[in-house]
Image (tube, rainbow, N blue to C red; front, side, top):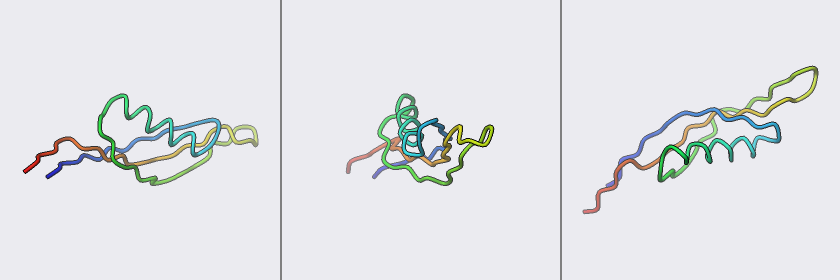
Length: 70
């Protein structure tokens, strides 16, 4: 039996949505172990002076906090 926890994070990149997702997962992995999946709740772009300045994603990240083998 496993017990999982879900956290919500926001990540941003000047390059792309994919880069923002990768950065978010990489940073989350520095603080929690055994990340299993992520759900992208939303995406938005930040506009400055009529140009795309950043790509931002809001996501839920699921990781295992305890696994008990029976």
